[in-house]
Image (cartoon, rainbow, N blue to C red; front, side, top):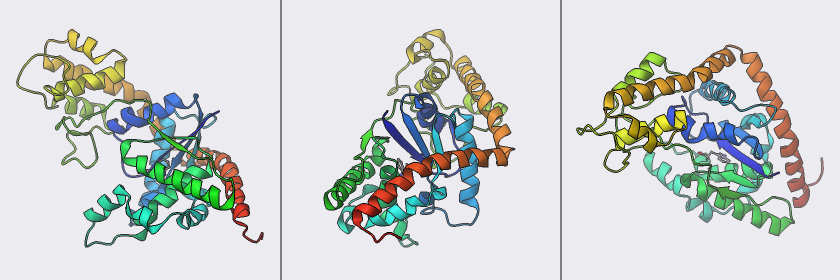
Length: 328
Ligand code: TRP
C-alpha cells in the first residue's frame, strides 16, 4: 500500500479555508493509502518564541484532526517532537545537503527577507533538512503538497538520492503529489484573496469553532457586487462565486447547478451561512468533547506516536548502520 505523509504546523486557529482546502481531504483519503499525519511542532519553533504556545496549538490541532474525522485506528496521527528520531535524522540530512542548495530555497528567501533586521533563526535556513527527515523517516512514497512546498519535496529527493549513493540504498525516494482537489475558499470580505490568517481583519475569515450566529452574520455581510444576477464566474463575480463554491463544498451540488437556484444575493448568503453551520455542527460538538478530555487526547497521540516510532526508529537505525557509526 502506498505510504502517504502529510504534515501541518500547529500555528493558530484553523479556518474554513484550511478545512475545505485540505483537512477534509485528509479524512476522505485515509482509507486509500497508508496515511501518516504529523503535527510538526518542531518546525513551528522557527516562528514562535513565547513559552507554552506551541503545546497549546498542538493539542488544539490534534483535537481538530480527530474532530474532522481522522480515525486513530486507520491513520497514524503523531506529534513530531514526540518522535526523537526527527531531530536525530535532521542532523544527518544537514550533512547531506549543501549550503548552496539551502540558499536557493524560495521559502527561506521570502521569510528571511520579511524578517530583515530582525532575529532570523538558523533553523529557518536548515528547515528543509528537518522536513526531509520527516519525509524519509516514514518511507513515504507520496507527499501531497501545494505549490509552495514542492521545492522542499524536490530537495528531499535530492538529499535521499545523494545519501543512498554515498552510503548505500537506505531511503525510499519520495515524490510530491498534487493533493486531491479541495475547495479554494476566498476571504469573504476580499474574495480575490485566499482566506488566510494574514488577512487584514477577521470579518472575511470563518474559524472552525466560531459561534454559529457569528458565522451566519459573516456570510450575510460577505462582499458581493453591484449587479444582482447570481451566476458562477470567478473572474467577473468573485464574491458570488466564492459563496457558490462554499455552498457546493457543503452540499455536493455543483456551483453552476446551485447558481440556477438563486435569483437574489440575500438568500444565497443566508443559505451558505446555514450550510456551513450545519456542516460544522458535528465537528464543533466532537471538538468540544475532545478538548475537554485532554487525557483522552494524550492517549490518542500516544497511540499515534507508538505506531510512528516503530517506523521512524527502524529507518534511523538503517541510516546509522549505512553510515557506519560505531554501534552503542
Ligand atoms: N513545511 C510544511 C509547510 O509549511 C510543513 C511540513 C513539515 C511538511 N514537514 C513536512 C509537509 C513533511 C509535508 C511533509 O506546510
